[in-house]
Length: 243
Image (spheres, rainbow, N blue to C red):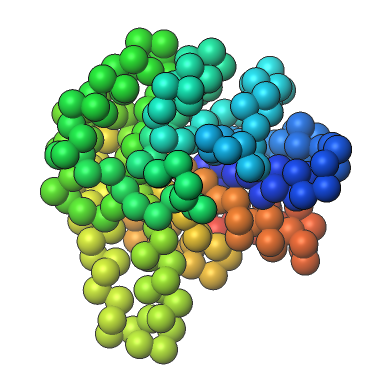
């Protein structure tokens, strides 16, 4: 079964809106695991507007499943990851002011940079995944840089899936996802996916990309939890990931 990693950034956003410690980020992370999550994902940004660097440090001894830290590999970010040593680090090419991740790496242009960063992380036993658009021309660069996995950026998929409900003839984009996943698997890379996956579009993605090892879902899952409750929501998502 594909694993579900819950991104808890939105919990931190809610906490930070009022100050104090409500909701309690550490308790939410523990509860997500208790409710069936296979991992916890955080994305600390330079302005620490949601997940703070100290949150990452405090979460490390509490997460009993898989701890995934994602972000742009600035020196500050790298120092944090090398200190905490999560199970997985997902590298994203976000500029400092990005609201959310919205693009994958150009593994050709940044080949040398990625190779150095990935080499540093892997020396510490950290599995490395890099954010990638559905583009087979970027797969070889990910492999050459030393990545263990790619995380398919599924924002465009989510948008096109919604449009395809009324215009199914325009859903050709999905072939690029399938081809990229196939090319990556043949190159020896494992497949993660994330961004705008939700209860409506997740099952289709899972069924058509059976190589999928893990999905990281935050915004939609937390929104659904407002209606269904956190425990029930996590189980709803997990049911969609069954083989």
